[in-house]
Image (cartoon, rainbow, N blue to C red):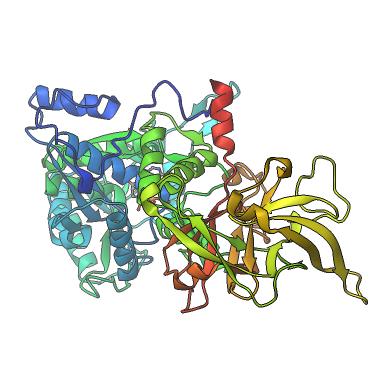
Length: 592
Ligand code: ATP
Ligand code: MG
């Protein structure tokens, strides 16, 4: 069994705002899981009288499917309780943030079908408010200006050490010599930090909590640092920037967020989250954590994905091998398939690894319903029909989608020279090979039964240049007389009518199942498969000439293919979205 399906797994509410079911105005009803149960009891106890969540991306990279899990939960929980969800950019680090990331993030959330309407906020709009709260803490004797350098601070903080029983101990840290500065001096120094009187790194503002706290996060964390760097929204207005742990809970409070839902790595930060809220005496937002999404053969961390982009391992954030929403979209993933996947994996309270084949299975299920079937040949070999009447073109009827009769049918031109797939022919057949070989007969999809009569070779290289056959006019379009049953059906494209096109075939970027767990001393980047992208010159049936970027087809027997944005008029480029073989369905069958 897929190990994400543990007992604590319950459905993420898969309903997007666009397809809203009945919002649960009655908080007692609706789906149950550990987050919703907490929300429900908070409402029942009168802790809050409404539900407001937020999705807080930092605009320093593009969203990946792990973020989609997070915002599906944020929007889903709000919707279930008749509440709302804010989109808040947590943009308080000028070094890595950019408007281009904001735009990409908004586009991807909307693509998945979630609508934040006018509830769009920026932590960088709260700088003045956050500054005032910092002053409040200084006045309460709960914050101080420190002169220790980063390195000294680390040393004073102490580190966790495993003892001989392998229990991690956290020996107490030491107080900074500046910890007991008088309030007035702190107020003066903090104002002068803001005014730009000190060099970067010369001073910080720290919360005065407890240098002996067993949780290192609580040992006088830094609230503000000096950083002379223009911010993409506030420009040069500030040279001090708030740290995440200070900014985040207070931004939540400012917006009146009731439930601040986040992934599990923030669990150890929760005491600090609560400390800032309590000491600043602001709205009591509550943080609840859920498991991070991990998928086999995939890295889900912006830092890692950024490295793939920066070092040119992939063509960009939207490379079809990337687990970013834009990469998945370019590959041909549909919002419905991703939402189905998210609803199946559930919330989970403990981190787990989800099999990537489940994601691919959800995609196949969706595409199977909607994708038109077409014929294309990826590795072309010429087939010559020796008894075809010269100059004649037949038009064969082909159905567009057996799953959807309303999709109708189309005409396929058929002539005396065709392209077939190179591996649909073997000069000396392997055991159980039912396709074409000298003397054997196969059916051409939607067309005739042919019998192989021989082959042409290149006189110099000895390579097979063409396969020869004869056709039986009586067998047109599946009308095979009973004595003419054949075991194999192969696909084809008429050589005179085929559209030349590029097909991009992908393998997993990471052959290793858990690329993020590389052994020490190994660079994970070196584990990327350099052959994970291949481009082949293919031929497609004429209807593919009009494919527009994003159009998805099933190339019969080959897989689902989606037209790439590189498609030019008359020169389609297709990405193989996913093959037809569904190993997940087999796994599921075995479980039953
Ligand atoms: P990364 O580790 O990829 O850099 P991040 O957490 O730093 O991600 P943010 O922009 O801060 O990126 O994330 C926004 C929200 O998405 C956070 O609330 C975070 O908890 C959530 N999130 C990030 N990655 C995942 C994941 N793999 N599974 C579930 N939630 C995630
Ligand atoms: Mg983060």
